[in-house]
Image (tube, rainbow, N blue to C red; front, side, top):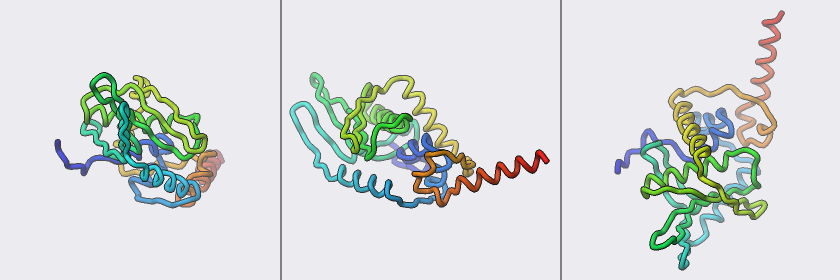
Length: 206
């Protein structure tokens, strides 16, 4: 396998792209990052996940911080947990993504999980039909079907992420309620850009 990763993108950036293209560009193109209370809580939560020891049971093996890579989609990253379930005489991977919050209406988390599954499928030459997301706030482990619809959404996001990075352009801000909890709000200044756009349109009408 070719170990060169110059043109590879971080798997974690796919969720950033789906959540907000401008946030994604600020983090992965402009190399900007600010901590806030939510990111610090999330960082602590994932550090505690990393401290979980790998376990071996009769029918389940648990591996933490599992390295992932896809040469087809040119992405690399780390899975929080990959469970290997024994079915018949073979061990089948079952990715589990850990999130500090609660289940969301949007599919950002599911897309990130599916990207992990795509990497595992390529690495291990098999098909993955299901994974799970564990939410720390509600202590729920929710099963996620890795179906065709989710796969298509994920592949579209991966391709969009590559296009964004290749363009080397920062997308315009689109101010909405999710901006209030974003750690990059002070850097992004979405309200300012939105106000300027409105003023520009008003000037055109005069």
